[in-house]
Image (tube, rainbow, N blue to C red; front, side, top):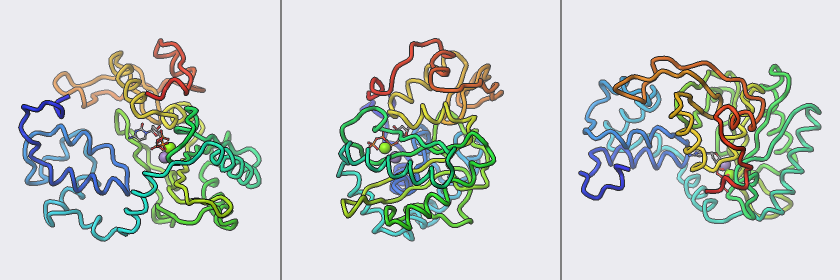
Length: 298
Ligand code: DCP
Ligand code: MG
Ligand code: MN
C-alpha cells in the first residue's frame, strides 16, 4: 500500500531495485518486492543479512550493484535473451495449441517413465483461451525417480526439435533450488535441476515459452495450487493462512507458525508441515470453500 501513497518520499533504493528488476526478466526473484519496503538508503551490504527475506545470493547481487552502479551479471547476460523474453511477453498462445503441446509432452514423458506424472498448470489450468507460456509440473509417486525425469524429457524434446532454445542453463553445475517466492524462504537444497525455462515450437509454428518444474510428491498439492495461480489469488491465500498463524508457500502448508512480535516477517518457529494430498486438502485445512481453478483468475 505504501507504494501507492503519492505523499510518500521516493524510494531511496531505486537504482538497486531497477537493476534487480531488469535481472528479474532472467531470474525470477520475489525478494525484490520485499526489498521495496526498505525505506532507508542502502549504501553497504553490512547488516542486510539481518533482513529475513534477503538471502546470500541477493546480497551478492546488491554488492555488485553498489560497486558497479549496475548489475554486472545483467551486463554479461545475453541481451538477445532479454529481448526475446520481451517479445514472448506480448504474443499469446491459443488454447488449442497448448492442448497439442500438452499431448506431446505427456506422451514423451510416458515413454520415458510410464508412471511419471505431468500436469499442465498456470493460466491453462484456469481455463484461459490464450496463455502467455505453458507451465508443466512433473513428479513421480516414487520420490527416488523424481531427480531423473527432467533431463531425459528435455533430451527427448530436443531430439524431436520441439524444444528449440534453453533460457536456463541445464548443465550439472546449475543444480540447486529454485526460489519460487511465497510467504517464506524454506526452500530445501536440491541436488537436481528443478526448474527449466525454454522455448518450444510445434511443427514449424511460432516459438513459444515453456516452463518445467519438477518436485517431490509430498510437495505436489502446494505446488499444484501455487502454479495454477493466479499470482493475485496466491497472495490472497497466503494472507489468509498467515492471519490464522499458518503459512503457505509453493511447497508446504505449515501450522502453528510463530512470528516475531515486532517483525511479522521473521519467524521464530517455522511451524509444522500439514500433510496435503491435493488442493482440496489445502482449502479444507484453511477452512474455506474449494474454489476451482477457473474461479482463480482474479
Ligand atoms: N506465480 C506467482 N507469483 C509470481 C509468479 C508466478 O504466484 N510472481 C505463480 C502463479 C502463476 C504461476 O506461478 O499463475 C505460473 O506463472 P506464469 O508466469 O506462467 O503465469 P500464468 O501461467 O498464470 O499466466 P501466463 O498465461 O501469462 O503464463
Ligand atoms: Mg504461464
Ligand atoms: Mn510460466
